[in-house]
Amino acid sequence: MRGFMAGLILCGLLGGLSMAGPAQTGKVGGAGSAAGSSVPLEKTEWKLVRLGDGAVKVEDQHRQPQLVLDAASHRVSGSGGCNRIMGGYELNGEKLTFGQMASTMMACASGMETEQNFLKALGQVKRWKITGHELELMDGAGKVVAVFEVGDATK
Image: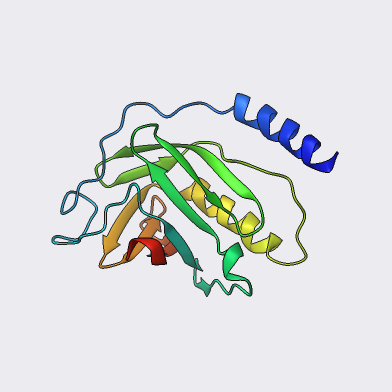
């Protein structure tokens, strides 16, 4: 019953999301990525390692907060550490914004505060930069709000 209710709530949340408008795909060596970088912004699993100034510590690697941006649908999906997250995004060169994010509604013994801060940080994102295997998401003032590393599967 709990799973059914979570699915029903998720469907309601997804129904209210708007799709992002046209966007350019992130190209290697293009605006916002390091010249010569072999890691694209889109279709890469990005694991969250830092929020603001604080490191993200994960006890269970299966609950690592992460995200993947899909160039074809302009949708982002991943995990907040406890719940699955999804939403839309708009990409234009080095500019990146996330639409309203939705998540499943499970309660976890640990990681809920990190998940809430992660979703809040995504709402502040205005720009991105890749250096090596590291992705930085920045707010409008250029302050880094989240740092990710490439997931093991794509290194």
